[in-house]
Structure formats: structure tokens, C-alpha cells
Image (cartoon, rainbow, N blue to C red; front, side, top):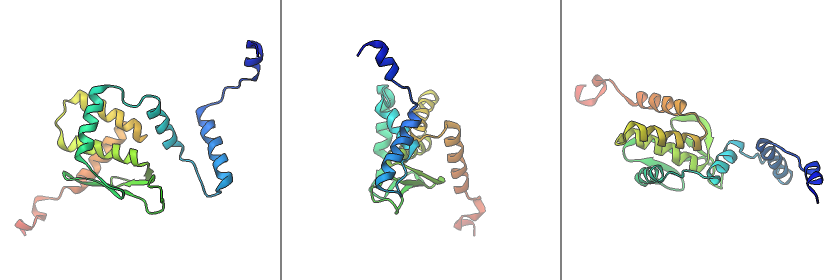
Length: 170
């Protein structure tokens, strides 16, 4: 096949279209199936490189190690926020975050979201590293950094009780 024939038969399609075609193909065998395009993009991004900076990789690994990760929940001893596996999915790939209600995430996205919470609770990193790590994790979660930070801030504010509400002042 020469170059002219190759270019005449090669067609460029978007990755979004590829995911939609995959969804259609998989739905043929199971009509209830719907491919999670956002999760597909996140997996593709991770597969194309993920976190390549060794410093960021080490920081993320350290904070991941602080979490308690089970088949049903992801928690931190330092925070009341959590992630929980949704009961409607036997594969464990649909997770909910206590601080981002109404959305479903993959297990890896839920872990990344909880790492962001852990980083902000512990607050041991310099600002530049914190922002770089959170930006990397927000990309995996599929939510803009500003929205992740705003949602976490709102969740933390909701936890704060006025001083007079504590039992020792009753």
C-alpha cells in the first residue's frame, strides 16, 4: 500500500467518538451497560504517562499510605470525610465521596480525592508542591482544582460547630 492509498483509507476520529463507539459496542451485549466516558479519559491519561515527576509520585504515595483503603470504604484517621463503594456495582468501580455528593467515581478517582483531603488536613507541604500535587490529582478525578478545593472547604466548614454547641459548655 503506497502513501496515497494509506491517506485515502485512513480516517481521523476523536477519542470521544472512540469512547462513544465503545459504549455502543458494549451495550449490544448488555443494553443496561453504559461506558463511563470520564473514567475512560482518566484511565487513558494515566496510561499515557500518569504522574511522571518522581517527587510528586513519592508525595502521592506517602499520603496514600496514610489512608485506610478497603473494598467498601476509604477513610483517614485525620478526617471525617470518606469515600464509599456504591452497592449497585459488583465490580467496585463506582464510588461516592461524602464531600462530592451526587457523582460517581472510579476507585482510583476516589482514592485520589481522599489523598487531596489528606494533604489539606496534614498541611505539611510547601504551597508550590501542594498545588502541583493537587492539580495532578484533580486531573485524575476529572474535576477542576478550584472546584475540588471549594467542595472540600465547604465540607470542612459544615463540620465546624460553634463553641457553645460543645458538651462542656452545655
